[in-house]
Every structure is written in structure tokens, then in C-alpha cells.
Image (spheres, rainbow, N blue to C red):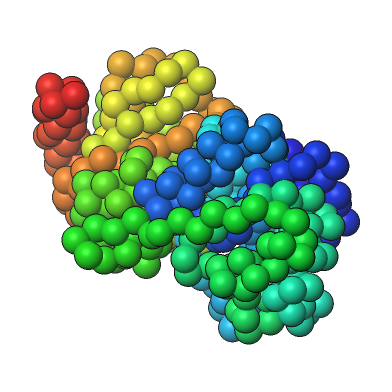
Length: 313
């Protein structure tokens, strides 16, 4: 996949089918939109191109950090896996803020991205003060010579599936519900780093550690049944999100996973930790022996959960 990150200096030569949005979470609604775009690609031979911003517009406007379900790197990984050809992470500058809706279409989507077709949601917004929408795109389609498909939003129990809805479920630890809305497991991507070396030598539970970026929206601190995607395959495990209060004080928030049936040094490797079920909150134990006994129970819970999941497949 070709990426243009944080730069307005690019031009796509091949004809494209384009969609626009934040794509935070790549949930079922996003998948529907991207799926229609890939159908256009197969039918017309266009390259599939996604337009988004390099940072959430709200964060730039308000000057505050906004938590996201998928970080920019995770979004790139997801788009590449889907078969997207071009991902544009456009700089959100004062110049682009002032672009009228038509100027946005002409200067970015047509001239830079070479759009011959567009697939958008009914609630799409772009241009100065979000003055552009699906109706504007329809009005401009004949002038600029592109086809347009407007996709109706996916719903769950009469509510639009959105990143906000998913964050609400994640905040409650409702992983099964959040994953249903996402259409795939909530995941944390990262490079394995060294931990405190207590898990394996002391507790008998060798673990891998990744540090989530500050902007990553995390579910409650605690222990989760998980799946871990590595270059060697997909493995079950149990994951702790939090600060490990029994063995460390004031430590950074980390994602620590004991992987079942994988005895390999993954330090420096990129992995994806998928959270399937929230077992219990993080807690401080009076001794490492108490922690070890709880980890044995966590392991049994995780193995039982994964066995039941396999039986349902």
C-alpha cells in the first residue's frame, strides 16, 4: 500500500475510487463503505484510495488530545490488510480548514487523488465548517466527471454504529459487544519491549510487553482473554492492561500478555493483541505468591473461554 503521510505534496496518476473519513475503529459501518469501494475497484479497475487527516480535526481545533480506537499506525495496518492501494493522511492545516467544499473536491480529490468515483456515507462532511456533504458531492459529480455512491449507515438496535458507540462499550469492559460492533476484535498493535522480568523467572508465566501510545483508547485496567497475532501464527493468551501494582510502583500503562503454547523470544517483534473477554479488574496482591495463584486461575479461565469459542465456530 502506498501512503502519503502528513504531506500535501503528492499526486496519484492512476484513476481512483475514493472514500473519505476518520476510520477510527474500522467498524462494521466502515467495512461496508470500504467493501463497496473495493467492489468498485474490481468492477472498474480503479485504484482504491482512502482520504483521512493525519490527526483528528477536533484535536487540532481544540488543542486537546483525543483518544482513538485505532492509532494512525493501526489504521495503516488495517487498510493494507484490506487491500487498499493508497492511504492519504492529509495535514490538517489552516489552509485546508479554509477550503470551500468545492475547492476541497477539486484541489484534493480530483487534482491530487485523481478520483473517478467516490463512495461516501450519508453523514460525510468536508470543506470549510463541514459545508460539504453527500448532496454537494452529487451536485458536483457531473461538473467534475466522477461517479458517486452514497452508502446508508449500518445500525445496531436502531442506533448508528459509530466510534462513539464503540467507545462507550469499551469503557464498560463489554468486549463481546464492542467486537460485534467492530466486526472484528478490538486490538492493540505494538513492538515487544522488555518488561520487569518477573513474569517468567519468578512467577513461571513468561510474558510479552507492548506500550500503547498515549492516544490509544483503552478499556478498563484488568485481565482479558486474548488472541495474539505474530509472524508465527495466532495464539491464545491472557492479557493485563494497567500498571502492574503488585510488582511496580507508578509504572507506565502497559499491555502484558502470557501467550499459550508459544515459547519464543518476541523482543523487538511487532504483534497484535486482540481482546476477547474482560475477566476481572486489575488489583494489587499482598505477595507474589498470591499473584501467581491468581494467574493460574486466569490461565484456566482463558483456556476455558477459548475452548468454548472454538466449539461455537
